[in-house]
Each structure stands twice: as C-alpha cells, then as structure tokens.
Length: 150
Image 1: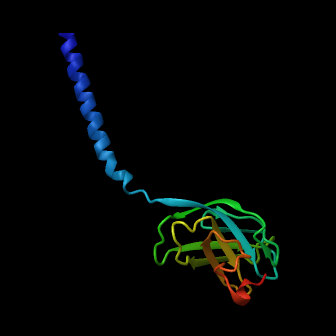
Image 2: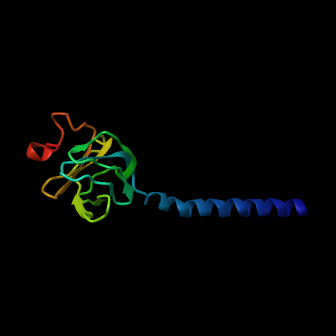
Image 3: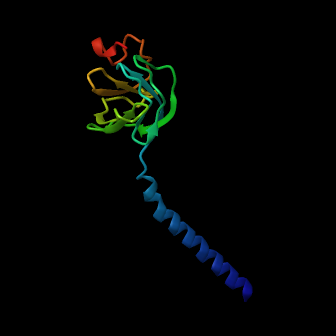
C-alpha cells in the first residue's frame, strides 16, 4: 500500500513542477535582449570633469580637451534600437560647482555596432552620445566638424 502512495505522490509532484515551469515560461519572453558596451568619454571643454556617467553607470576623470584614453566597464543598453531612446548623462568638476545633468537622445545604431558607448561633452554645453565600434580617430566616426575637435 505504501508503494502505491509513493507512486501517486511522485506523479503529483511532477505535475506540479511541470505546471510551475509552464507558468514561468511566459515571463522569460518579457526580458529584453541587451548588449554590454565599454563607456568612453571625451571632454571638448576648457574644464576638467572630475567624474561623469550615464544613467547609473559611472565613468572616470576627463581632463580638459582630452578623452578616449580609457574605458569603463560597462553600460548595458537594448540590443535593438528604439526610436526616442534617451539616457541621462551627468558630470561634475572637483568641487561639484559645475555639475551637469542632461537627458540625451541616443542616435540610431545597429545590433552589430556595439563596442563603445561614447559620451562627448562639447564646448557649447551640449552632450552627444554614440554607440559605435569605431575609435574617435576613424574617418567614419559619427562626430564631425568643429564638434569633433578636442
């Protein structure tokens, strides 16, 4: 008799496990496919930026008219570009007096263009960001003209 009860309990346990797995399956479809990029900054201004970052991801120190010398790991963004996607870029100097916080639209990118999430603090006070595999020196780098001068 005990043998039959054990067999029934095992079958019910297996059924419960299968139902639980079936209920959890739709939840996995809700996760967004993301890519991880190195964060790199460029400072086109006359002031050093003590610390900068994008959303909750922090970067390092950027001397005036410098950048690209180091990467900070890492920032995570959706693999598929979404029109109107924005990030919050923040930064400050040593004493925090010149703190900035800008909501910046991310330009269109492809899923195979990931590698770097580049942040440019421009002389005009504007901030531009790019998802790119290219280095700043590359002729096809997305920042052009006077904005590109460090």
